[in-house]
Image (cartoon, rainbow, N blue to C red; front, side, top):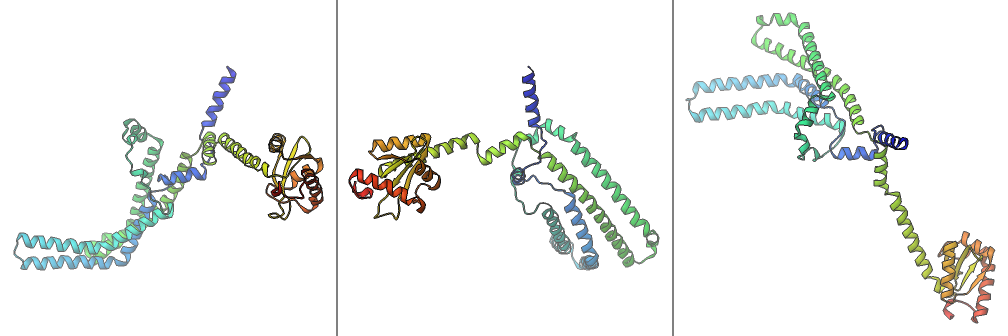
Length: 368
């Protein structure tokens, strides 16, 4: 019973999301469009950009609107009120208004894109657009409504409203003397004052929103990192997925070793001699003076593999000779397919000479 309880506790702790997300997990989340992002930053950028732009072209916009209104008033006095004339006037007004508003819409678009790019870089993901039944699940919807995240968003909204109201009040309070005398100003002066107050208020609110947005981004990053945390088991599963199951990898390596050994064993019939120690090591040598500069190791092995080499040599009537020191030296110093090093030439030459004398030919496998 204690063992079972211990195993259950161990399994529980292994499933707890306590580990930081791995780079692979972050990359997968990014592909799904899940990134740390604050929607307040683009809004703040857009607001600052629009009102800053208005401080430069606000006069031109007002003059353009006044010119459009004056033109309408002049045309109306000379027009006959017909459906065609009204339609024409509306189309002209819509086109002129669009041209006046185009710079503001353009700067809004640029600042909005910039605000998003600074946070997440270039990212295109269709995953958030895919239809998922869980999004219309009423139970999950209720959980989202009464979740801690919703409470945080409500708190953020209340803070924004409070600070925006306070900043607006401060700007207007500082200009209270001019506002109180607005009725005594001309239409042009009053319009300029109102426009100036709007721009000042907008810029002040925009800067405030940018400060709050930066704080929100820090929170969103923390919340995102928390939500994508992984358990120890998740990390193990990810490793197995990326690197391959160790059991499968060991079986693959075992299969590769078996194939390699089979290829090596198949070369034994071409050998001139197999040198053993006599039980633990076996090295097969081949020498053809027409093709090789020096004798070459075509197979080698220890224990089980050595036994296989000797069995194959016996099967094909390849001579086997015992030389403990030479067998060990060849096994440890020479790889399969490599030639015998110079310091072993003499010992190998003696073995080959002995083999050739027994077989009755002066050298090389070609003369068998």
